[in-house]
Image (cartoon, rainbow, N blue to C red):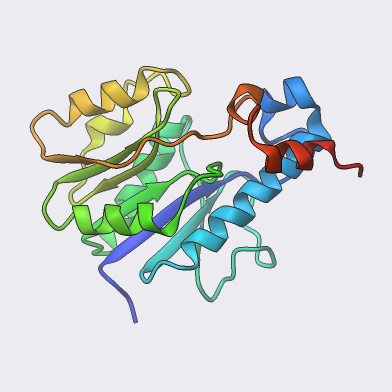
Length: 204
């Protein structure tokens, strides 16, 4: 049965040399691919705990037989020339499908727990928007009850200004902030993470 809430995540197809490219500059393509596969598997395990509709948006090609079970996840192709436009398209698609709460969450968060997403869903009962700030100045989660195109445009994606610029765009809305988490983009993000460093050290 369709719910009134949908959780969206974006994923890159896990291919050598095409994911976690900033991390790969330090640890190499093969190790970066192992880290990314671990992170998307972790993300799927977290989302699997959430009782609502879910969608995964692929960067290049929709895959039928992968960790994202087609019986649990709607599958779409990302559309747009930059991250903001791709997210805008995903939110537009969800709201056109009559969802009342639309939440997008990153797929590169070692510290992500089901509680973060459940907190976001509850927050939208009383707030217009919910954001999970990332330590690097971006955000790992964004939830909205109505489409606000401004939050998806005129951003320097991948920089430390994204979170604050988004907050500025929501100045006329009530916003609930989640716990700040660390997403994994560069080696410094995992330098003190024993689990991920062990994955890097594995031999193919």
